[in-house]
Figure 1 (cartoon, rainbow, N blue to C red):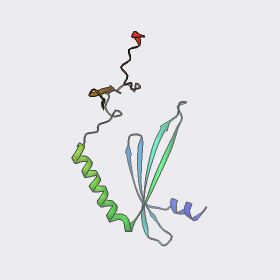
Figure 2: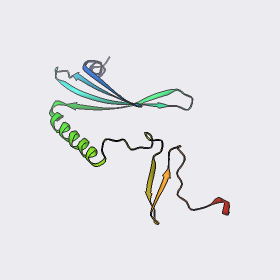
Figure 3: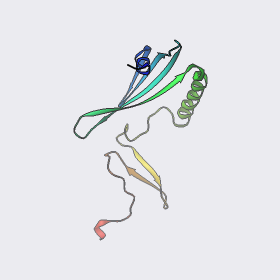
Figure 4: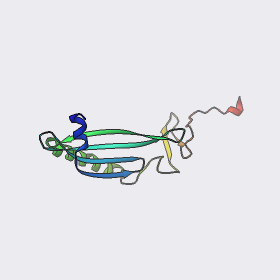
Length: 129
């Protein structure tokens, strides 16, 4: 086993956040010198057509020298989002009656995406053909 693999196994302290299809892992790990750093891993579950599934993972390594700046920017960005859009989740995945609005030359058009239908923005009526 390589040193990198050994370091990945050494978890000092861990927390898990399950959020729908996504799971976030927060792990404190140790460097070779014995100092600590944080890894944040996003794991997202995908289902294949045959019913089997797989996970995609993305990982961030955060070191102590970056904690203050990272925390400050994260707080600023999350506060901005909540201030601008509130805490209510607005998305087609979370709301069955979600309608997306699009700007068109004539004005604003709505596309119903509640059933997962393909959106179409044409004025063609196939009965006229």
